[in-house]
Image 1: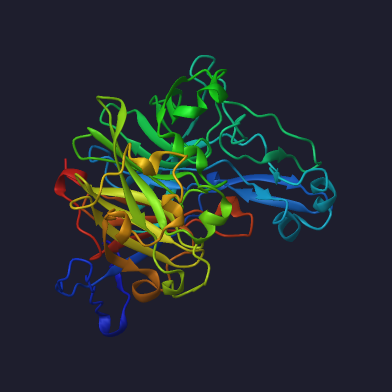
Image 2: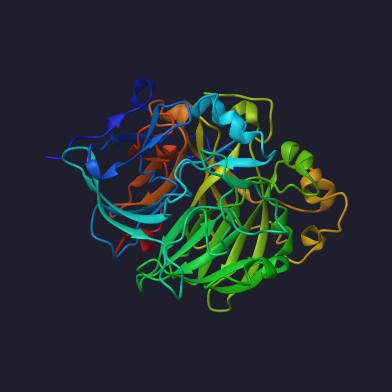
Amino acid sequence: MKRPFSLLASLSLVALSIAAFGSQAAAETIQSRIFSSDDPKFEWKTVKLPNGQTGTYTLGVGSGAFRHRNDPPNVVWTIGDRGPNMTCGEAPGILGDEIAQACRKLSNGRIYPTPDYVPSIYKLELDRDKGTFKLLETIPLRKAKSGATITGLLNPQTKASKDTGMDLAGNVLPDDPDNIDLEGIVRLSDGTFWVGEEMGPSIAHLSADGRILERHVPVDAAADYKNAEAKIVADLPAILSKRQGNRGIEGIAISPDEAFLYFMVQNPLANPDAKAYQSARNTRFFKFDRKAGKVVGEWVYQLADPQSFGFDPSPRQNEPRISEILALGTDRILVLERTEKTTKLFEITLDGATNILGSKWDDVATSPTLEQQNDLGPLAVTPVTKTLRLDTFRDLKDAPEKVEGLAILEDGTLMMINDNDFGIRGDKTRIVLVKGAVTADPAIWKK
């Protein structure tokens, strides 16, 4: 017998207030169940640190998630990002003070304790009787022609900002134009994948066995990828090269008929600079026509008030960020907006929102920029409509922190998975199944 979901609300009821559409929806009951894993295949690597101690890392499999309606029951596809990494500012608190010696060499250093990590796609299976999950398959990402595995190290970028990769000894690590930082995934009926990644930022088409077939990058960045094995298509708006470091494309979704991809930037662009990024609310949502092979729409999504995130309210507007998107239907998207400890799920629709693709807001010469103007009224720009569907502070207090993956299972249940950052701080991967928060079109999950 399957274990029942637990009710997570006082009086066992959570009334979802859906004020964004100006109407009151019927109260629903949110039910959830948390899954864990003791699968030894998630144990990954032990590394000797500069202070003589050891760092033990697990696989990070929660940077994005997807289930295709034709997949077997309880099977989901997930991804890991670029492997354990941290800025030189973060490193001493995690790896010990000795790492500071290596960091003195560079002001923009990023430490990779395991530079040989291969970004991968993971096939997971849930056991609903036991409340556990296990790893069925790993698909390492490979270069298109040679078949060599890639790493999560940096691209040789000149248009977008970049760090300098370093190992634990302070040695500078090589850049590679084929490397990608996986942050979102969808799977097509033919078994191939599309992924969103935040380094370029870019979206890429992968074969079923993980080869990077085609990568779409900002139009001004073509030369940065001239030595890549993958087919490079420089057709994304050049404004995307203004992404803040470590804040690129963070989620990707697909329409039920697989005609359109959707992708989203994690935070407002550093446009014209990082100061604008820090105080901006306006991030960007895109629609990509697969048959035409190009972006056909761009809309503004306004991030929530950082003080409204109950577990960790903050005055800093750059604390809220996008970590995942999931199609609930055509042009109907679930957006995961979070801080470190609090997750909110908003349903958005594109109806009535202003398509700014190709407008002055995509021109890097425009001043003041879209990111410098949080009040959109005078700009005649209408953002997408947001409807709050779930708030972990209100509805799901025992949910894991740093949720980054969403999928719809074969019975319409919502699945959430957290990014444990490869266990750098000892965090475990958890999966949460949620009922009563969102309703996806049957075309998303039903065969």
